[in-house]
Amino acid sequence: MSYVEKGDEMDYSKIKIPNHVAIILDGNGRWAQERGLTRSEGHQEGFNNLMKLTEHVFKTGVKVLSVYAFSTENFKRSKEEVDFLMNLFVDKFEEYAKKLKEINIKLVFSGGRGNPVRQDILDVIDKSEEMTKDCDGGIMNICFNYGSHLEMVEAFKEMHNDAINGKLDFNTINEDTIYHYLFQDLPPIDFLIRTSGELRLSNFMLYQASYAELYFPKTYFPAFDAAEFDKALIEYTKRDRRFGGINYEATNN
Image (cartoon, rainbow, N blue to C red; front, side, top):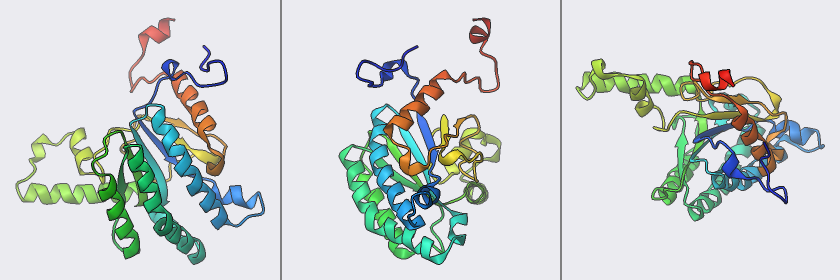
């Protein structure tokens, strides 16, 4: 099947569009080092690419995009690199939120808000979420100071407290209940992409990605542009999602 029209434009009517896409933004530092640049310059290019890529992703029909921007473990990196990333966030994220508002995308954040996250970063997060809170064209979920283990521990603590206070009946808890207690109540991930060729999930949205299709392109994130994302969609379209069952129609064909 051909997925492109004349002029090499993608025909999205022939593509299976995932509802929720998640991307682990990996390879900024290696992209920079291979070009004789600093790791910080790589992070700058990665952020620039995220701003451009986001609009394209939602244009394809994706409804939720989650990105792994900064993990709880990333604070272990050098002070110089961490400080650059934090300052980049403060300097640029309001501009990013304004762009999301222009295309009617709601911005939410997933992650811990305690130490060592700086107050000026929390202020930017709050302002950005407030700016886009009424947008209903899609959801952009930024995972910042995020770890899936942390998310589940916090969820279970909150469930326990609600049960003690009579707000939650343990007998009614099911798989969907847990989603409601995560950092954001979002639908399950359909398609999870990790750029740079690394073959691991690195503690990213483990509960939400239980039945996600996984894709590991070798492209570093600063070079993972609209064309690369379209390649990913073609790969997703070829996948046979069975959720533990068997697609008998596909098997018999």
